[in-house]
Length: 65
Image (cartoon, rainbow, N blue to C red; front, top):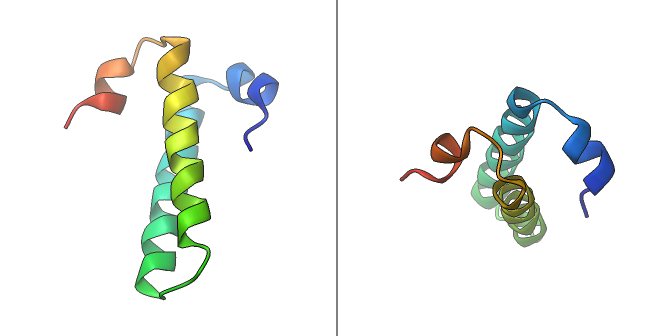
């Protein structure tokens, strides 16, 4: 679970770096057929969700296809 106070205090570029890092971790876990891949995926989705809900200025970059 992401600490909301710490997350909201972070600048947007750091949030994006953290999301990207977790996506990379998820890909590597999937490649290794790790049982922890689902936990990593849920963490990615949680970080995206709390970032998008907050309504920061870079919403287009985060949610565009």
